[in-house]
Amino acid sequence: MARSRYDKGLKDLGNGVYAYMQPDGSWGWSNAGLIVDGDESMLVDTLFDLDLTREMLAAMRGATRAAANIECLVNTHANGDHCWGNELVEGAEIIASRASAEEMEEVPAAMLAQMMKAAPQMGELGDYMKRIFGAFDFEGIKTTLPTRTFDRELTVSVGDRTVELIEVGPAHTKGDVLVHVPSDRTVFTGDILFIEGHPIMWAGPVANWIRACERILAMDVETIVPGHGPITDKAGVAAVQGYLEYVSAEARKRFDAGMSSFEAAQDIALDDYSSWGDGERIAVNVDTLYREFSGSTAPPNIVELFGRMARLAR
Image (cartoon, rainbow, N blue to C red; front, top):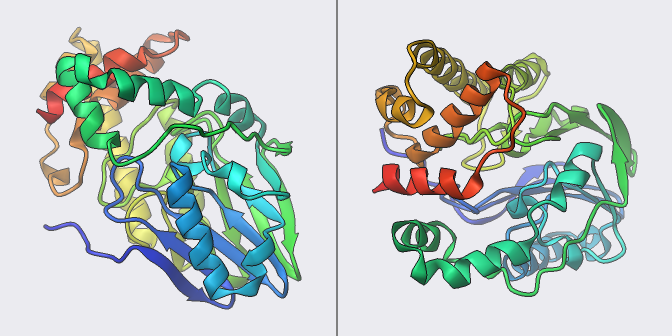
């Protein structure tokens, strides 16, 4: 089955709610959102670099005057493709979970900029880095942290509209947040959902991520905007949940059999997900699951994991 085609740019979801979409949803090509009521507005996430964020903000200003002065920005999590444009939303209150705010300082844009400069001397890994991140410009990005943090849940008003911020991490990252607009039966999920692309589990535990999917499925929502990929419905949520359950069960079998995490990643059949992009992320997912199974609290070796993904992508 081919991946869905969808257009880049601002999509009007109706009643002052917008999604900003970036095909094809692969590495760095994230989605964002805008919630408007009267003259008040909330931005859900910025993008991977400053040029992309400027382009998005210009499209939003062209669609509604409320976007000319965005009062509130919510970052769904700490990955750069959802927060490295924060500095361009001047004067806004920036909200994130406390765990996300702490994690944002761990991998600044300057670190990735330096890696990209070194990529030509990094062989296969460098080639892979250039392929997945070469379209982005990480130079000169200033880490712009949240000005307000919360744990578990926070309710925010945008004009007369209520927006619920629900922390469901650690899962994809340490502090993932759902942005739920009950009056419009809409939820922005951040990277709890990758639609038609393999999710990547940097943090875990997997049970938290599965519970996050279950929470979305229990919501009275009909429009679900994922962190990557096309707008979906509850069938898309169920597909991600099914993937997580399958990979977790298969990894456990191989862990119990004494296989290494990379051997397991290469051995797990992904035939049912062959149409999904970025299948090499199985290397990260299995490594995270193995650390969970063993009770290890050691941080992942990011460079090694990208090297494994480069081998699988080849």
